[in-house]
Length: 209
Image (tube, rainbow, N blue to C red; front, side):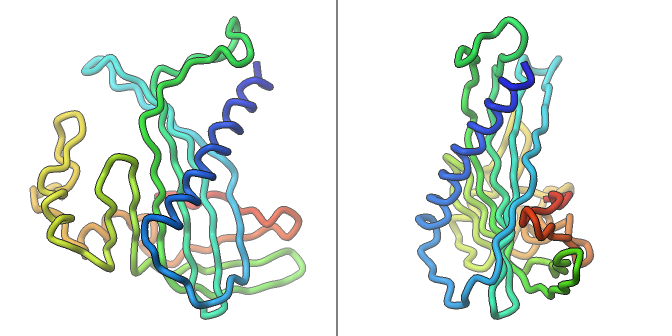
């Protein structure tokens, strides 16, 4: 069962990694002039949401993070996630006979500046609070806080999930570029330190993003 679960998770992330890369290239159309100095990945993670008893609805969301650094002192943090409902696997479910209903994928890119310190143990990146977020969600209008449009404002005014407004703050105010950026970067109340393992080029996932 453990082997099957690991295979399922690995397959899910293989799909989203490819999808995320495609979205990244196609959605924005921009060209990064600076040269890449490093590319690092986090471990995979998942979260489970049970909407009962209000709704007979349960989802699993699988997520991974990547950090790309550039020689101009900037970084991009990529957060890839894909969500499934009606997931069944485990004891009694044969290999390749699991079920899962895709509920969409997201790719969020956080842009900011960083500094790095290298020693014998590895690399410590200090990521400053992002100054831009580009949010691509399957089936939804892309949101770019650096290139805000009237269409994005209109989307925020009408964006709901399970009957709840998603494009407004707790006071009912429609998000602007500035307030949406603050919301989605709440995990960066201060700069975030990330330790990169030299043997695996990996890091522990950043919380709050």
